[in-house]
Image 1 (cartoon, rainbow, N blue to C red):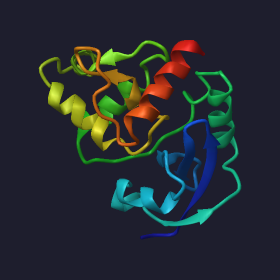
Image 2: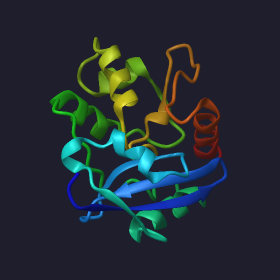
Image 3: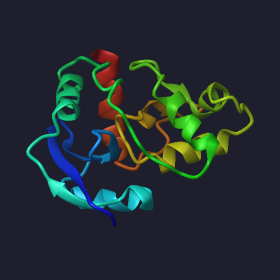
Length: 168
C-alpha cells in the first residue's frame, strides 16, 4: 500500500455507507458497510492506501447527503477513480454513470449502451467489479425479466435505492 486514503461513513436509511477517497477527492471505493477497510480489496492495488478515518469528505459526503435528501443528481459530478486494466470495463463504468435515476436498464440494454450489444456477460462483470457503489450506479441495472439480479450490498439495499430514485 502507498500513502493514505481518506475514509468516512455516512448513515443512510439502509445502513452505514462507507467511502474511500484519494488525496485528489476522487472516490476509489464505496459500499454499504460500517467498515471502510473492508472496501480495500475492491480498490486496484495501485490506488490502495492506509484508510484514515475522517468525520466527513467535503463535497463527497455532501453529495451523498443531497442524494439521500432527494437530489438524485447530486452524486453525478463526484469524481471516481478505479482501474481494471481493461478498456471495456472503464468505458462501461463511465456509461453506467449516464444511466438516469428512476430509469433502470437491463443488462442487455447496458451492454448495448456500452457499445457491445452481444457482451451481456461483460456488462454484468462490469457491475460485479464496480468498487464505487452509488457513484457508479450498478444498482440501476436489472435482469431482462425485470428481476433485481445481484448486488454486492444485498438485494434489500438495491430495492431501496431503486425505490428512492423512482419516488425521488
